[in-house]
Image (cartoon, rainbow, N blue to C red; front, side, top):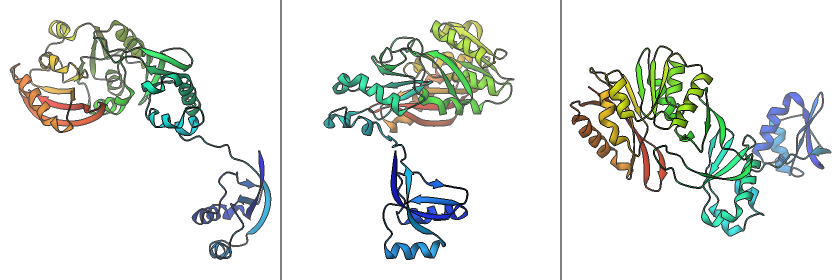
Length: 356
């Protein structure tokens, strides 16, 4: 679509300074595209400049003309889900639209309030329109449950599938979100822990899943040795594929099964670091994590849910008490941080403990 508009004609070499000046006094018509030829810019403006606006422009730029020309209209950008759905969902329900979504690969996952269930497909289509990189929209149909930490999903829009390839800090992860646990909200934590590993350290990842902690460590530290455990056979199969996908076959070894007998039988006293990303049950595995750490000591990356953000100190004390029951002690608290809110008044917290 084209539209006639008053405009400022200026030499191209003065275009940038002219645009700045016009922006300062609010004259630019941002709904229209600036036009140019070999020597001139034609900048559409909202209205005929007043005497004061002209005087201001003359002080800042020179040799401009005011004339009328035809311009191409800019494509209107939809900035929010509310704007996109304003005429498709009753106004009183717009306030209940989900304000966040998880993006795993090219799949978007949302949590839909009960009052919006009848608008599932409309909402899914709007998300596809808003996020051009998304191919599938799913909604959470159950909480995370079971030893395998998986949930079910309802298909809303796009391609009806639950598998994808996710890219995070240069690593690729192929997964099926209906069969394995994965949270893109922990990406910074995956990167933080990976960046701490140096040289030829030995790492035991007790609940490795598809490898978001193990794989970047292996990829960034080819001399390190990583042993990755998960009880979910589907997770281990995806982990094996991701090991090949990221070319870390030489220093990452997957184990399928319960971490407790595997540590006792194969991995006692070998680890410089142990990763314990199973916040709902991590307390039950503190003794086996201590067993995996080398006799001279090491570091445990421990994750837990707490109800009160001020109770981090209490969680530290409880961890120390459990470590002491194994005959070891916490030598130093290296790191403690609330990393995300997982439910109202429930937080996931990351701890780094040095023990010996």
